[in-house]
Image (spheres, rainbow, N blue to C red):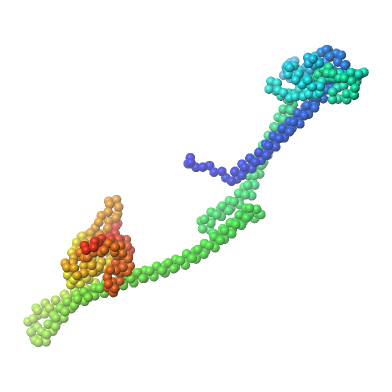
Length: 555
């Protein structure tokens, strides 16, 4: 596995994590407030209990009118009933046998009016200095405070013991907060009852509650996770996965996909929207296929029309070339036909005048007949080449020898060029590789260029057309050898502004009626169809050079 591949969290896991996070936040917040409130309730109950027990101590100390306030043993007797004390097993000091007093009160004491300890009792080894307990002694009312000692949280309760004048009996002695003070008479503080309460029971209670809550939360989280996981998978993800599968199938071309989700919620709306979209896509695809088939038929029909039109244009170009060559061809045919006619007439006259003298003139007659046969072959060759050039042939490509095509093209027009005093210079490379082409079309291209060369030379004296063929080698690591045909004349050339227009359809510099402007345009298209190229170099007044490049057959 690639180290750069990102870990993918599914929507189910994300939803479960989000839901559990939210639920956990709510539960933790509720638990915090619950524990805080519960602790306050427990502290209030602890305070109420401490006040009640401290009042009992104060009442007991008053029962004898504090006459024995200095009697430490008797006062300690009062404290033993309130302060917690454990009896240890002598054999096992760690084991408690019995427990007296209240488990929450770990310290009790009596102070006189001068805030000096008269009697005190503590649980176990608990110890606290008197100075920490005298801060609440200034008030003549019940006092309580929470403080810390050695890291432990404690609660102090102080009840002042009051003495009222004009009270005749001990039953009339007032315990502050328990009995109503008399309407008349002065009162004074004669001592204090003090207790210190531990928060251990509260802490133990909270600890047990926290354990219960932790167990409850673990069970709740597990059940919630399983429930949410199941709900997300069945209610949410299954429909989404079905939608995803349908989308994947549509992307592969199966446009008839529909999703059935019957739920009155957003997923149902999504499924309905998807089905509508799928039906629209399917309909559009059918229409597109119909349009595509129709377009293919039209393109096929139009392509055939273009091909037919191209064939017609090529044929028209051939006939136009034949038209331009007609005078020269007629002259070329006239010479051998005249010779044939003269020789045949001479033989006929010889036979008519003296039939018996034929044997004596047999050598002369054979000579004339040979000349007639030679000139007939010449006429046949001219007509054959002309027919081959002008006929509308099927466009088929086959291995072709370029040098043969060049020689046949020159044969058609050579005599006409001679009448114009235009000479040909040849430079054909031997053993040229073959090229895959249509010889008839290449002959048309060469004829068009040669006719243009003749027109470019015009009435210029000493006109020369140089024709060459050669092989050009490509790089050793590339199979790009090609055949190069170069036709150069010494005519008047082409102006700079017209060079870029030469191969444009219907462009011509000739007078109206002397040219169609399609010859070079058709030639350019034919060479491109052969996978080659045709280039032009010219300077006005210095002639022009056409270079035809054709690929060779490889392999």
